[in-house]
Length: 216
Image 1: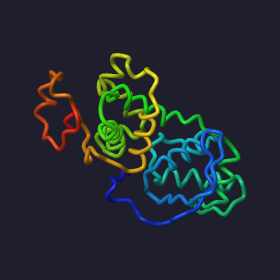
Image 2: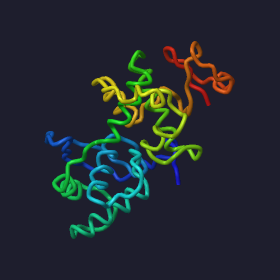
Image 3: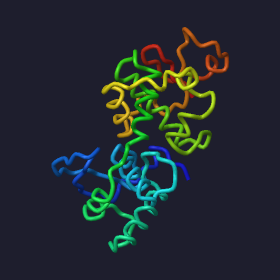
């Protein structure tokens, strides 16, 4: 079942030492909450997916599918099977595989191709719309499926999606994954100066950021 940010369960705090993209960072506290959203959850999902334990679409949300994948991993590695990612479990997952990080790259690509001329807040807002759609019953259940849903993003249709994103786009993707939503929960946006869609122009406006109007 899809969840919204309002239904996040503030429990099961853990402390991990995190390895990202083949480099080891110093140990620091990371709070991964059940039903939470973050870049760290996405990293966890991608590692479990690469190992064959996580079969669902990559979302960045720690839901039942992620917990079940963790339990299968724990059982295979003879760890306590509880679906919770403590430091021992995460260390084992770290050592088992390094993810390609495709979902984060996809989010950065759609941000860059759709909003590279916008402010950082405007770029984060575009990423947040993608994540809001992942959580909505009106759209597909993964970052990849949302981005490539037919006819939804002009940058995918015209090929700009394949431009190489800059570092700002990656930072905006991470900010959106970590819960910043300047789009205020909206599922749509458009540039009123160039859109020809009466459907888009007629939708209730929530917030305007730069050239984009975000709508319900």
